[in-house]
Length: 290
Image (cartoon, rainbow, N blue to C red; front, side):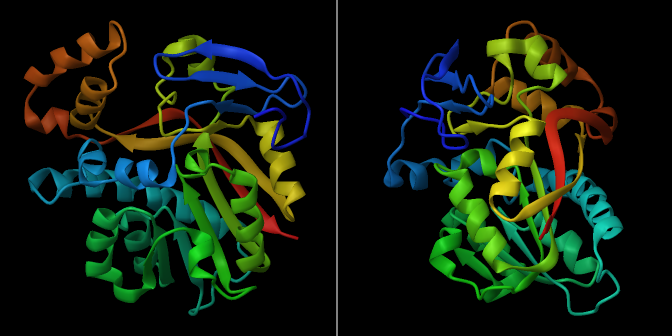
């Protein structure tokens, strides 16, 4: 890009040279991006069955373990949403999860009484999500669906905003479909997090599919530009277990850390599958449509 998507400033700074891409950062607002390029066909091919299997999301015994782990995280997210929702007692609340994958967050939301909708680009993930939510799962992009304006009480974007080629356009569409004073939840990598500062170019969130990186201040700015007021920001904690982390560091190799976690594979299954909470290097953001 010749100028920043967020503030339009020019002359971005090269932050890191990675194996398959470079990370640039705006010298004015610190909004960062990868120069890794994918066409639409490559994007669709990326989020195939193999992609989700790397996250332990496949129809086998391990699926139940990952599902339990993910839903514990999402229950925590939904509890925080309730603290800021003005209509949390309504029995007709509609929630949309953008990048819903196989529907774990929506399962948590359904248990809380939400009417659930999901959008997902992966045919594989959509097929699994549709088993629970049927035609309320839409395979494609958010703009393809064309939801009515002022339709949703809550929209969630967990681990998805960094994947879009134009995150600001996505936020504009999100604002359109949210009701007035409705809630938006975002979880996305925080470039100013301690883990990002310590790990530098080896930060686990530097992946080919991650195209943009926010910090807290430019996230506030991006939301404000698109009609959303930031209510709450905190470091995100995710429920994890050793079995999941062992697999992740096997796929996304980091010097020394991957070797350490490989050694944990000899531990008993009861220890490897025990869930615990850990700071993730992400930011957890709650906003409200103005």
